[in-house]
Image 1 (cartoon, rainbow, N blue to C red):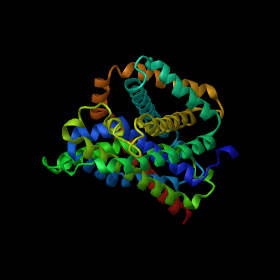
Image 2: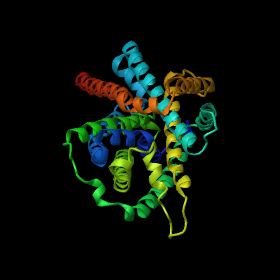
Image 3: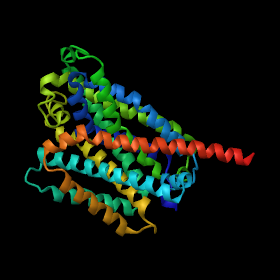
Image 4: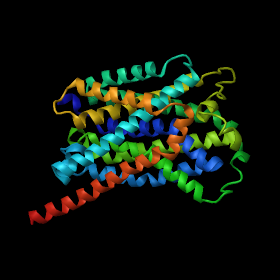
Length: 364
């Protein structure tokens, strides 16, 4: 379909929005909880580790370019085993969506809308996501590209105004507890921040108008995304230090409150926090689109998307009872669920490689 045709720039933009959405309230908490003032080192390590999932994504995009990732899995493993793998992946995507939705809803409730029920915010976000999905993926990707432009603009303001407030002594002593904790935290941050970008594989490469540029844009946007993540963590640690950084539910928002433009424009943290809201919205929409297009048999079946949204909202309302429970979940459980997703895609990549070799032998 024409409206499903997108360009490489639009698709690659989801990498940045997914990384930032997962960083806010999740990746930053994991990094600071595990490595404290060495959290910025953890994020650097996570960026290096994330190259492996990126290479896997590049490989899968170039395998059977006319198929979505769901169709590729069925093609590689057959109808029954393919169904099992797709079922497990969809289950994990449901968890990613529920985690992302609660994360942004909880941020809005704790910082702005303390009297607003969680259900109301969930319905608002999911309602807008549903409307976007009915317009097709081309519309979703075009809107996300605009969001990414806003995000990067806000990020420039974020960095330019806060660098003078960084105190070098807040980074000291470096690696006081050794390198083990930053490495472990880096691995967990990589799982939380970078593994969700596998969801862009739901778009077959044949739907991309400028296929030859895809690899380049995916790499470039990955680099931009991890630079934003690293810079954010460096600034947060440099301003708050070891003790304050663990005192806030959202240390990134606390840092934004210190921004002052031209010496007299203050209290712009609410405007700048829009970058997180937009990125979380993009990730939620991508999750719903992935699930809907994996399980539905008839295109444009809106009932499927409604059912998916209903399940996500029920998961949010039943699984996450409080901030404390959510924080424990995102540190001790969520990264390992995403480790399962990474493991499944490792299996898919190996299966794709074997299938490709077999096909090459048969052609001879």
